[in-house]
Image 1 (tube, helix red, strand yellow):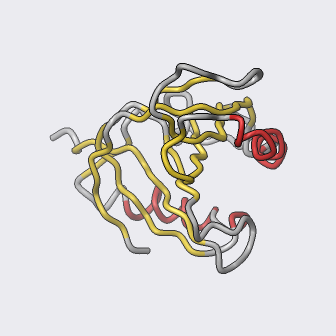
Image 2: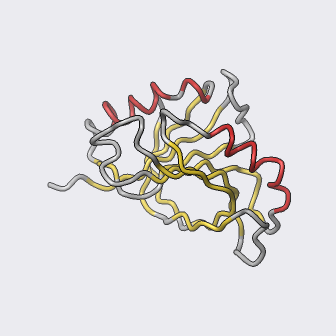
Length: 161
């Protein structure tokens, strides 16, 4: 998988969130609730969609598919002046990220995440940072199509020596 290191500036997002786990994956429900209403969000920046995951501390060290985390379906905005009903604002804290270009069905991405956490990270000079993970679903994103493309953003920091 091709990757690059980027420093992300802080971003303002508006969207919907749900608490879920990998064993009780509610991603489809989250996006079904967000997509029909995304046009209600004014002042958006571009058309890229953000799928944000906020994992509890030690989530990946003591991985359990039943551990709950928060997931957002959102879009970037210039400000929080107008937030549609039943939606919320979220500040995506900036920082250092490794970005992977992923091509394939969303349902098949598990092996890519496994590679990132079990091979790329341990063999790099970085470790996970305790910030949100997110995916950018841009123009080439086609939901669960094998030709779909998206970016996987993983928060990192230099390894402590």
